[in-house]
Amino acid sequence: MSDQAEQPVFTIEKVYVKDLSLELPNAPQVFLENQAPQVDVQLGSSADAIREGLYECVLTLTVTAKAGDKTYFLVEVAQAGIFQIRNIPPGDLDPILGIACPNILFPYGREVVADLIARGGFPPVHLAPINFEAVYAQRLQESRGGGPKIEIAH
Image (tube, rainbow, N blue to C red; front, side, top):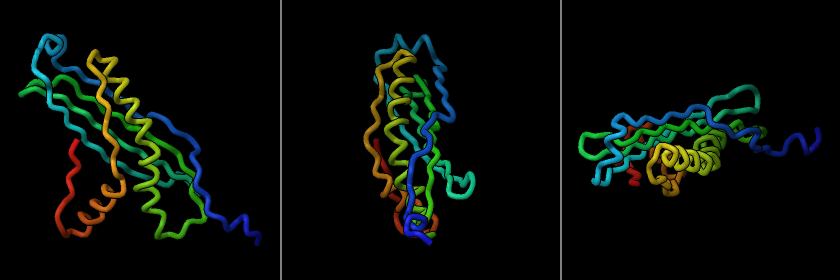
């Protein structure tokens, strides 16, 4: 067997928007409001094998702006990518899918969120960088059922 076949492979095959939504449930009245809304950001990621050595990772970003009980906007973006991952030790696959892939997808999703909010008539929301290693560690901690939970504030 050649050494070439044994080399680890990690490549981005495709980056795309899998799902996208923008809701302005209280338009046009919210455009007349003077109160600055509170912005809440939620994120999640998932990964599935497509076939041998190919994985789809989906990073979901949900941004909600509210003032009191009035929602200004709700944006949800599912930013996805297809990654070729081969010859990786089994114990290293989960961290790659849970840290490296979302890290690659985040700038794309961040741009889509800012653009969509601006297209909705609001000043764009530029999401702060996210430490996906800390998010991954938090998920591991929660799945084991122990320790304090880490909160990511935006």
